[in-house]
Length: 326
Image (cartoon, rainbow, N blue to C red; front, side, top):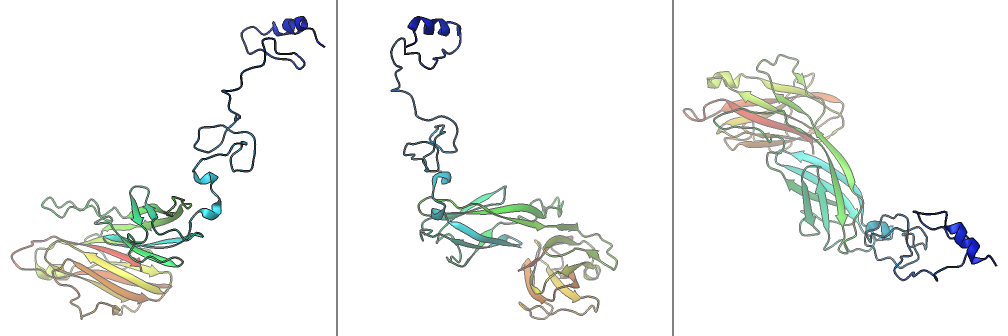
């Protein structure tokens, strides 16, 4: 047995720090009170504020029964899964297509959370989604008025800013009725802009690359005849065979039209729908045409002025065009 005096002499060398109890030294003033001491120490990622270092296989690191509710403590088999998330832009909306499943079948009553890094939306399952399916693809039209041209001013000041477009990464997270959250599925969506097309646009026209893209076409000449002969056009390439959408929007009472031509032949391409001759739309401020186009080929798209009421709606007339895969 080691004398208490010897232990006291050893302890005396630690003056302003923690006392070191050497192995074999009895508690001089009795055993410490452990009633207020946690069994935990170290770090974890849970939300109970503890710090765990030991292991008991509960996804935590201590020997207590943890009650944390974050997804790090949940069996992965309980979490919803997002299998795909695709987007297709429209002039005033974004078409969402996604595939979400849950092994427990409790997505009803949950939600789908959408974000583009700037804005966010929560869609209730199933009623908040246009066409809900699980398993399988679901579809929803997310309304976003003038999002591709947010700074366009068609008013008296007439200072059009056609250089916006969009280049954002979107994400989708599924939440089931029990509050379990899936991993976020991210999808980039880039819509380059050609801006306001120049007044002089000689052939070959500006190359817009591959859809999607947006542009502005302006008709500012003083007479109807001059505006009808104003060529506002770009060429583009379809990388794959498929369905392509052409949407044109304008503010003033006028008739603007979209025309697509085959290159290099220059043949006019008849749209799939709608089509009623060359007078597609008239004074209604919006036109959309659908084309099934071969891949690996170049095309021209024209925005043309046809007519406006005489004596009102003075020029300029500004058309905003979106070309995108459907």
